[in-house]
Structures are given as structure tokens and as C-alpha cells.
Length: 323
Image (tube, rainbow, N blue to C red; front, side):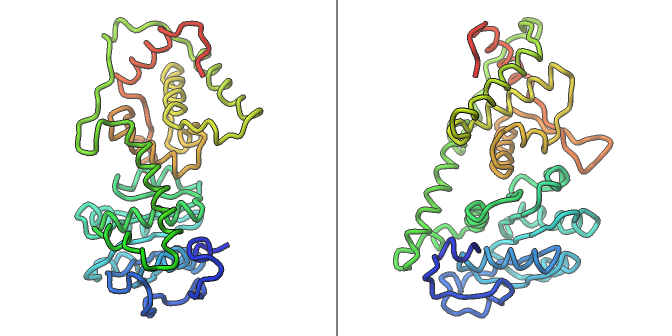
């Protein structure tokens, strides 16, 4: 099912193929807003991006291959967002140049941006993209629509995107908005407020840390995974805790953890894990380090205070089962 059917429903009057030029439609709800620009690594990639953006009711401006995208961005006077759609194996100087341009423009608040890619590109893209660019990995239609909504909001389109009361598809869009709000509220639990400083983790002197073995942490991780034999996996989604456990185990074992490995440990879709990772880095719980041997890879580790807190937590619960 295409995004257009998922968002607008099968009975919608809007019928377009993936390669249609949506920018000519006059009845789109956001037709007077700056367009969304698309860059794709193939015609198929461009078609996927057009389907997502067109279903959302936003005008599409240029839809260009990667080789032409950077020049198009530099020439574009105004844009609501930029969507970059990648297929497998698309890593090279052309993509590097485009990502540098997107990072710079997003930081300057010229537009919001989304990069959608397969799992194979998690590590290089995580190393390249700025914090304000949303990275989607093997995402489904709901994740793609949510990411576009957030990108448009960053460009100052909150009122335009929420003013859908008269549209017959308003209920579907409201449901999407509620889901985005629920995710944001969950992430907000990690801080005291959007403008407040992160709550510091209670720390103890480094010399006073209790001993803890990697096998203890591995046994906890195994116990957590065993739950899915008896109950649906989605009942126990707790990516922050799963990532904390994985990084603690790696620290004790003196192993380095790349972003892709940590996303697997989170036991949630990669896009969700990346958002949690970004938030935990912003809150000072995790630290990102560039791989000195490979500029396209980033390692993640616990911040010192987070490591201390985890070790003291395990010491306090003792032999009680920690799951």
C-alpha cells in the first residue's frame, strides 16, 4: 500500500502515480507554502519520496538525482523541507557534498530535512548528519509521514499543518499528530522541560564504584529477551534501558559500540532507536565519538556519570532479578 492510500484512504479523490509532478496540483491544502525539494539516488527512490510528500498535501518543487541536488539546493530561493531518499550502497563524495549542504541549511533554519535510507547506511549517515536532520532507516509509512510533519514544523509550519478541520481527511491527520505527540511526550520524560537543563545523574566518586561483571549484564539482557517468547514484543519496548545495558556491558568488556549495533540492542525499529539515541546524547547520558580510523562511523559510550549510576544501581539491587 502506498503512503497516499494510508494517509488519505482508498476513497480519496486524489489519484496520482508516484512519478507525477504534484507541484501542478491547485487543490492541495498547502499549495501556497514553499515546496518540498526531493533528492533521490534512483528513479525508484525519487518515486518513493514523491509518494510520501504528495500524500501529505505539500507541493513538490525540484525532484533531482543526487548528482544535481546540491546545485538545486543552492539555487532554490525558499523551501519547506528537503527529503533525501537513498537506496543501498549510496555512499560517496556526491552524497557527502549533499549532506554537508543540508546540514548547513538546516542549521541556518532554511528548511527542515529528512534522510531515508536502508539499514546498511546507518553508520555512515549517523556520522554525517547533524542533530536537526531526521534519519529514517527502513521506515514504514507512518514513520515517514511523522518525519515529514516534524520537518515541516521545524520550518515554522505548525499552524498550517494543524489547520485541517475542514478537510475530509482531518481525522487521519489528527491521529498521526496524536502519535507524534505521544512519542515526543515519552522522550520528554528524560528532561525537566524543553528549555530546562538536563537533570544531572547522581554520581559517586570513581574510586567508590562497586565491582560488576559483564556476565551479570549479559544475563539481564538474556532475561529481557526471553520475555518475547511468552508475550508480544511490543509490550516491553524500553529502548533507553536496553541501550544503557548494552553500553554498560560493552564498557566492562572494553568493547566499542557503533551506532548500528546500538540500534539493534534497543530492540525497536531503527528509526525509533536513532531518535532515542539522539535524545540521550543531548541529555548527556551517552557520548558519541568519531572513529579515528573511519570518518564514516561513530561509536557510542556511556557518559561517566551514567556509567557510575548504572554500576551503583546494580550494586543496590544486589541479587534481585533485574529485568
